[in-house]
Length: 278
Picture: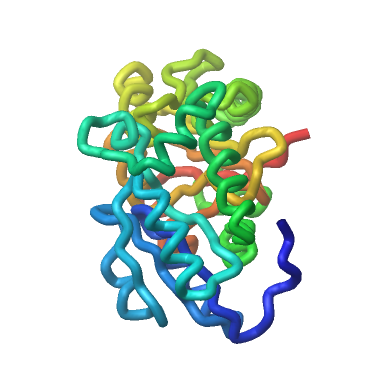
């Protein structure tokens, strides 16, 4: 359901997981002259979101009924998803879904990311709640094409980027993950349920040093959820793994705290490159 264009001063809902992206979205919402209602996922959302919100609700992961009820009660008609909810958390034993979440999960054909999120978006849509694209408030953070760091990749690393981009794109098409670690045009690791950082660590151990890490969006990426993000924590993992290059799809991957991220990459001698897929 499309409820029409956002009106200035409108109360926008932010369904917040972990990481810095919810904070960036919150800043974007306020900078555009809108008010903010945060639905922070308990144990995940950054507590600093509370101080900048007009309204704040703490929601336990798996309590879909409470989430929908809270959104409707405060009069929000448009929401944004931002932040991580680890798959390992979702498959852990600590999450007790409510009846509405159980019904949704049992209606799914599989448990892939896209399947779960599209079903959730449909559930919200039936209540008249529109889910906005994450980039509506963070478009300025998208990676640009070309080398963004002082260090430039070598010819061998350029070949690894091209090779890794093809592999990562296919992984994304299969909804497995969005990151691949390569060296000398051989795959060291692919991202799966463990997430980007753990994939980088595994790949770094095999590559020893000089690994090229490639991150892309899924083909036909739905910008309402799961937009790929790279932040300072990822950069620290790249350092630990001894990686030499971070290559991301331009116009599709969000670089959190971009200026500082590039500065830190320069200090570490890490090349950061944006590339455009055909």
